[in-house]
Length: 168
Image 1 (spheres, rainbow, N blue to C red):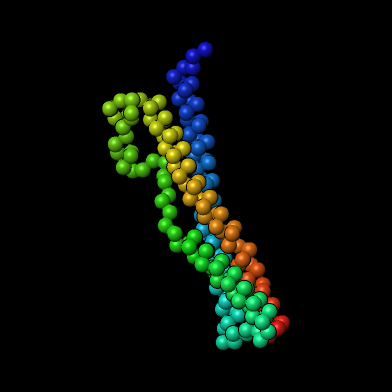
Image 2: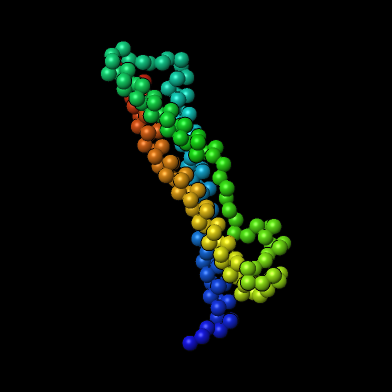
């Protein structure tokens, strides 16, 4: 049974709408990830400010205390460095349809401008797919490093706070 042209167009419209929702979700998730990254950087810097504001370095005299101190400081500083790398790394965020594309949409099947509505819908669907694929790679890279930096940040902050408050 052959599918009519109107049915194909309706299927393409529904597919584009679903891809638009998925793309919007990814866009929002990326913004939330960037917000978390900046929040964690602020938390790490606030912890360092709290610990060293009075000018006391509080390095323990015992060897195991020094190892504990420098391990904690290393964890905290490494986590902040990773978070700063995530925050400052430039990302190429792909859009579904660029303005330059809107001005001169050409299709591989024809040299005509907007040959048909079906060709245009196929083009938009393909652009959403390409944009989502490229943006998902950037999001996965960032979220991977964000989750890798969270525990060292937390553990380093707890260890240094314990040393500052309870012992030197």
